[in-house]
Image (cartoon, rainbow, N blue to C red; front, side):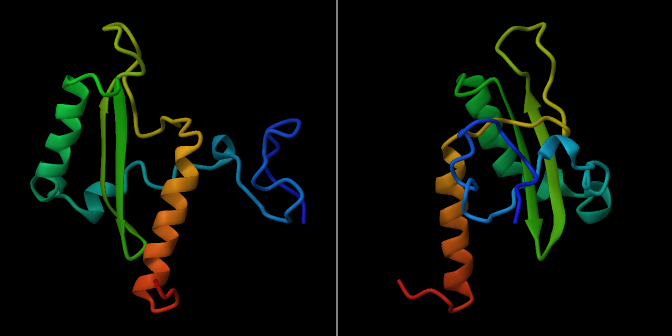
Length: 126
């Protein structure tokens, strides 16, 4: 099985030589950009506390910008963006199309999420 996304050299340590496939996000069509209004038109009300946490983090300069997508049962139910690419007032704003480099955080988030799903399904005994 070949890789669909080649990061160059040995940079892609996760999929290199393991028969795994990873997709290049730059070539993927935006699947959700306008779907959120249909899925959860009242996202501002339902996720107001979550959005407030992110706004507070941006005000505290924890990061210059962020994007939040919430799915439930395979459907997008919330999509919201905050801030800019940098702290500079003239920096471009974050959009729903923004791709973030999450680096090593991906391993922790993906593994934890997978473990929670498997545990909920009774397929992982902790």
